[in-house]
Length: 552
Image (tube, rainbow, N blue to C red; front, side, top):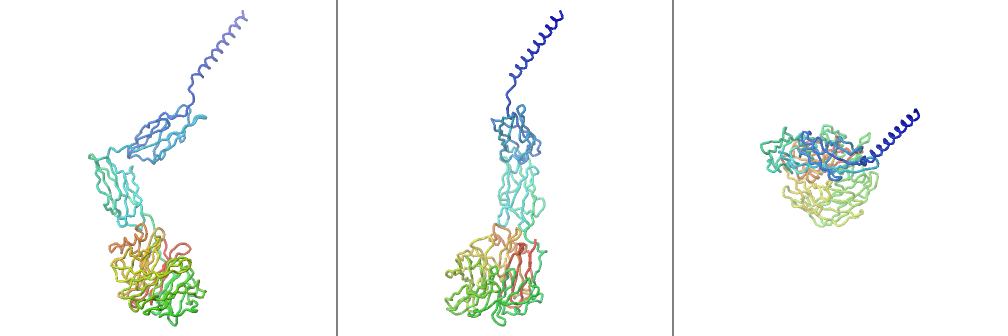
């Protein structure tokens, strides 16, 4: 009996185990196959208040979500429902930038699927500013404009040297039938507080407020440092250049050079970094000829160029000499024979580029006194591999001033090719490479006798500087720096100068002296030091020179 009972129990247990195995096998057959799918997708922080949830439409591996127009596409948070045991990268609940379509990866074991999610803005159903762009009111230079629909602000970014009066160049709003409080081409003074634009629709007004981000640029005039002052204002003009026998000057960062006929024909030079300030002279071997043997001087790096002066006779030889450095002997860089009796060359010498390679030499025809009356003639020679071609003659017809020949000097324009800045005692003009006028600056903007004008760029700012020597006003010798940052380039910046804005645009002025002599020369130069800070040099006959360092 006991054995039969045990046997019955074992049989029952085996039957139960067998049934269990059978049930387990049946359950495995009913489980779904593993999948890597997104089964539901939504953006949960849409709308201007970032509290609107919007479901996406899933079509295969593409998901499209249409959010309210005023949603911030750069920071949307999503929720996703996945197939069993699947993992999503990035994880559900992540905040992403959806301005462009984003890929999400779903994995489940060895399975992997990539979903592309596109978020688009639905058409607005309430008043909204959709887009706006602004530019300088003076030059139409675009400013960086950022529209924030969340806090209803329009941020405009510009620097301290750019105009704070702007014009609207692009304006888009919605929905159909909405009305803005302003229009394209309307001006806005961002220096004034609470400048706004209102969009009205169906009885609703939505106000957008301008905010400015003004970045630092250019130099700080209060930090200008005087490195060397040898002016008559300081009573320190060196004796060897203290008379009107000294005519022209230049600065190359190491030395100041002055063409002088005081006690002979010399190029006097001063080492600006020397412990003892003293005058030295270049080797003048074989420097001879001309009405005046020496008249003006210009530098190109370590090289020095100087010219004689010829006038009132055809067949005179105009010469330009070159010294490779202060220790070299001179060679003749250019020799040109005048062709008529109304040519007076040498009062003002200009060097553009490097004549030993492909630069230019220019000389203006001084009007009257042996030159052509009311002359605006500029004679130029272009070098190719150090060899000068035939003379070219520019003779622009001025309409806003008398002439450019009197101490007319030609300078390159930083950042602009094939245009030249020409300035003299009675004119300041921009000329094209063929000598035609691109722009003429009116005398009520920049006065006559603003000489040797140069353009330079520094710390995001663009400037025009020149030296003035005028005899009709006490304290008549000085140099100025004018802000021409406005515009796509220096030409646009100069064109934007007006009689109304020139005072505000003149950011620095340094006096050199009172009136000393009538109708004599002035020079200006800008040289950058090893730290890329500009050193400005200004010289006038009788008034000596000054060198100042500009700082951020």
